[in-house]
Image (cartoon, helix red, strand yellow):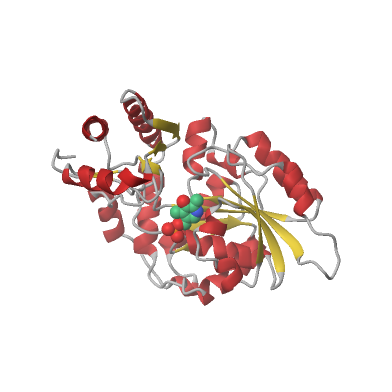
Length: 341
Ligand SMILES: *Cc1c(COP(=O)(O)O)cnc(C)c1O
């Protein structure tokens, strides 16, 4: 990384495909994936199904589409999904479950650790009574706001859901960060869920792509909503090749991002007078007085540090295009800002 490159802490979605990844995309064997003919897409789907302990996988252009297709595969019109207030699937996907899926979300408060209390889940499951929507699905997210849900909690929540006749979905956009942080195999984080969606375009560094995993039957049911939502791609092997490359080269190194988040949090704490939350895997949150947000964002931009200062809790995200030297530059610039302002 050249010292003139911006240090982009806005999100782990900003990574650019490396030279090696671009070569893999260039060389990918392709076919028409709507016909199931793309060998590279098929290889990626099989690779992830094997890694995460499912029968089948389905390549999707985005995590938003993957979550929505999963919800539509689990739920019929008028069914209900129990989901966290803070969950991406509820809060940051344009309300797609309700708008496009005719699925009623029942948002439930997230605890500070990102979980949903088991009593809250149990109490929200509606009895079989025509007054109520049919509670059909529990959706969790791991990591959530960078925080890792403990595996014993996931086990308890999915067991409760299954005992009450619900299906379970995990938005595992950053599942691999959770696995690395816990020091377990990725399939352990996926265990107990009927479906899991993972993103290749976050810390793994692919330009595009998510994969939905589940039973053969569930995945077959997700193909129609994917098509309906515009996600039936043709020679998608050029994209899947980037995903395969990412899984083969960029998985173990997620630990470096977690190390850089720790470096960032330690540096920010040394500034003093700053409320720092984290690190949580590859994220650090800093509380900034609302009236200083715009000035901070502009000050840092002038010094080649990019942040998204949209709320008083500013999220800073590390990823494979930020190194330790970039973290030092970011901390120095923040120190300068708070010394002057
Ligand atoms: C990024 C993300 C998604 C999906 O994102 P896309 O930008 O649609 O690929 C879903 N859930 C979580 C938790 C995410 O961070």
